[in-house]
View (cartoon, rainbow over the protein chains, first blue to last red):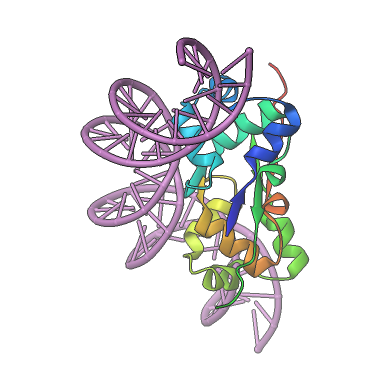
Length: 70
Length: 70
DNA sequence: TATGCTATTATCGTTTTTCAATAATTTTTA
DNA sequence: TAAAAATTATTGAAAAACGATAATAGCATA
């Protein structure tokens, strides 16, 4: 499972979803999908804009969480 | 710019493109596109499979490289 | 040289998913 | 309580992954 830790990075940078959405030129609705782990993919242009505006690396945003076996 | 450092991780793990492609259930052709920085997006299912088989994190594979200003 | 093996590159068609636009609802905050 | 912010859902268009396939390149080794 790939976990999107956008909320953590946003909190560290003290930036809200509305402002971040504006800065990366994405609608707040679509940023919310990403932020709340409902996206199934990400374009590199979007990931790049996020890293640029949040001054971070992809590894700060994306995390691989091994599934526990059923 | 988002750089895909798959070649580095693969070298560390001593695994070839053919075997990795088989393990993550992707054609060698499509893995090559990703590995050589010609992909424009990535599905989380693919990123997850890569992290699982390479025993690594997204941050090992994806790197944000700030563009130098022209 | 010749022969495999691996990797890369390219094209086509299908499927998946992002994303904008929009609206409704919920949550948070002043 | 009212306003602002955030979430959720829907629709449609555009982008891109991906499989299948084939051609080509690189690189060993006999």
